Image 1 (cartoon, one colour):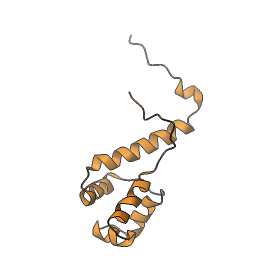
Image 2: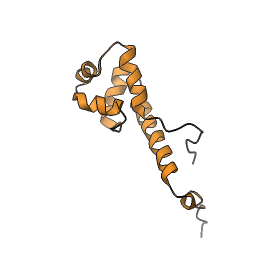
Image 3: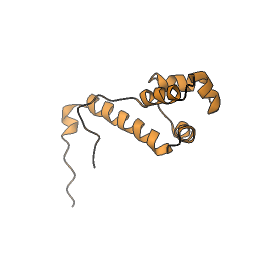
Image 4: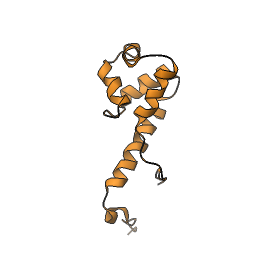
Length: 100
């Protein structure tokens, strides 16, 4: 299995989300209205306090002409990088189970 390993720190999807409404000259509150969610749902994601859920990914995909998978992948890569950084070194050296 391939892991998203590089020398870059984990980047929350909210960083990318912040750029999109700005490029469209939309305020977070107006964007939240546009995708039919409470303002704090958008602000929480933009600030990195809230994960991008599957439902939010669908809304973002529709709003920006991307796929929901794009937003979920950003969240997954972020989560994996954080988890890997927090795991004990011993756990990262686990070998694959041999058959039989």
